[in-house]
Amino acid sequence: MPRRSNSAPLAPEGCGPALPLAGQAAPPLRQQVFERVRAAGQIPRVDVAKDLGVSPGSVTALTSELIAAGLIHEVETPHHGSARGRPPVALSVSPGARYVVGMKMGDFGHSAVVVDFAGGQLAEMDFQTDALKKDAATLVEEAASLFEAVVEKAGLTRAQISAVGVGLAGVVDHERGHVPWSPVLLERDMPIREQMSARMGLPVHIDNDTNVLTLAELWFGAGRHKSSFAVVTIEYGVGMGLVIDNQLYRGAMGLGLELGHTKVQLDGALCRCGARGCLEAYVADYALVREARVALDMNRDQSGKISSMLETLYDQAKAGNERARTIFRRAGRYLSVGLSNVVHLFDPDLIILSGERMRYDYLYAEEVVAEMAALTLDKGRPPPKIDINVWGGFVWARGGAALALSAVTDETFGDAWADI
Image (tube, rainbow, N blue to C red; front, side, top):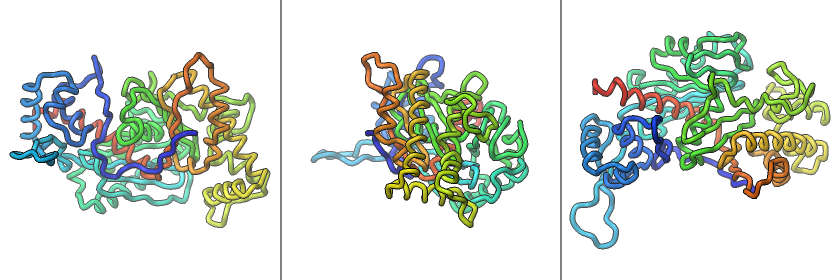
């Protein structure tokens, strides 16, 4: 049975990837030292040197620079046993050195968090939206309003925020900052990053929402100690993120890993992207609701929200309604096909099923996992471990914060270091 996790800590003891990068991908040693301290939460200098494989003298010199720059500080750690004398000293990131905002702009609502440089969360906020699709100008204004509200709630000012990280459903070109297509937007190929940055007066970084969710797992969750893992999320859509060699993989054009739009049935059910037979058209929220309307004669509630229909469908399945159970069972079988394809293509150490819909245990029942294993080539090795993560809606925004933290860290130790 998959292991289930219900939440993530708001003030983690360390954050960021716990496994260091190597070779050409490794950042400058000064940045490696800083990131090792942040990943550990608190760590003595000698352990930093040991973990990075460098001399203690080099670490002492670099940490002195980082302390002088206000990026890390010394903390006393308690004695163990009856030891006397000065308490041992460890290093820790100075939380107030930088602040970022992470955001998720969603189909039916948006969420935001404020996070400090050590990964601690200061505030969170969300609100529901009326229209599923909207023009880019409206989306930008909604993002700006949410940004201002959550920063005020954190007791900070705009000037104290270093950057904003935004996750958005659909095809997102992270490098260009453009959104070729999103189910949230009426227009196509919109320069959302440029528009949000101009409106907020800050650097903005955007990515596909499942990529930022994967960053949340890499920085705060089950993926911190894994060099290779996949995240599959099931909500109003189906998405996938992938970490290879401790780094988020986006594909050659930054448009890859659209698991929800891989085909599982030729000329099958209509997907919201306009094509037929996509995995999403059988597993996502709207697919379950579409089935429920036909099989159970259900319609949207008076508030116009799909969520109550899903809850009703789930309650009926739990109560023994065979038609409701059949809907979830069918979705689970298609999910097993998608997961077996992930295993064949990427062979990850771990697959994390993440998202609010993971409350619906029919989607990851033992039968689903068993069928995934049956569809996977058996070469004498066990299938990858599957974790279930039912973090609340703010996990997406925390992923946006991780996106911003990563960018701000690179900038701090790049050309901007000379100005510190």
